[in-house]
Length: 344
Image (cartoon, rainbow, N blue to C red; front, side, top):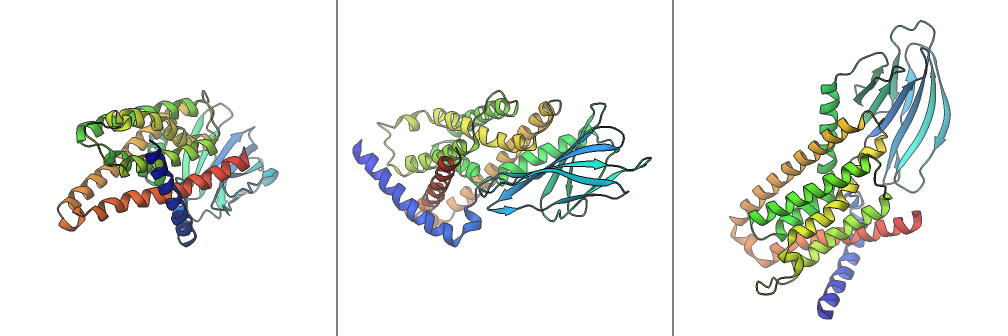
């Protein structure tokens, strides 16, 4: 037992040192957080006044700069501004929009929208909610337009697909789970448990029934990848398999609960109204599953191609993915643990 622990600690230390060295050389690649769009929550107060809550993501210390303007006259007054200074999270700005009297087609323009998306949610005074994604070249929101439900469905399905496919840490865990299981039937059980688990916590967190701060969740996700890497580098004993080897679905379900909380952070940052959450949650979760299937299909195809090339049968090439995952997971774990203890 102690031999295994010391062996794990040795790999953890080596992986951490190399991971920190790589992070200096490849800082942009070291960021594992999924893509997070900007968010604009607009609430109609009366016929001439709207309130705008603008949430702008901070990515690797870079602050998103977006400025709202009205095209048909009127004024925009900044009510409050809160800046995130810890290198992540969201900058928050509240505005009061005052339209001119008898404005027939009030239009809100978001200047500076160069990359990514701005997810807007407009709540009319009668309670009707419309959700629309804006991007470069399409940065205008007509405040009187009606958005179809189909547009909203496509938006959140796309957001779910984008979220999972840009979440390198989530994809690494799924890849490790595929390598961890010995046959497709076992993998199917494990990935089903993972899907069930992250769907449970995604729903509970998005509905505000469960609340866990983001830093511990992100630290736990990095640790889940480290655990898989450790198990994969250990010799496989068919006669006396470890508990995780014998029941891989337990590992996938347990860590799936953590990953679901990570998925939920994307929806919680949006700050949707309670009436929009059920539809957005269902569509976002469908998008996550579609993205997961896309990644798994690509990974299985890649493994089959590599299996046909004799040179990839060498143990060196079999260990490269594991050590790469372990190095990056070690860096993320230390990075997130540092943030966790300095934020909480």
